[in-house]
Length: 68
Image (cartoon, rainbow, N blue to C red; front, side, top):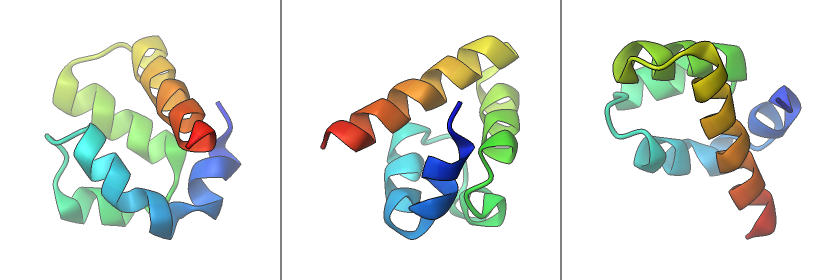
């Protein structure tokens, strides 16, 4: 997972993250400050996913962001 992509573009990506994973509160998303490990943990917790699946979703999300 490319953690730097999220951290470096956090201000632009924060709203997209909230849209992608709607079970996360705005405060939770803001508190991660672009830390992909924290984001992964929140996604795992809220959606009941394994670490690998949460990482896959984040990687897919990053790839879509890069493509747009």
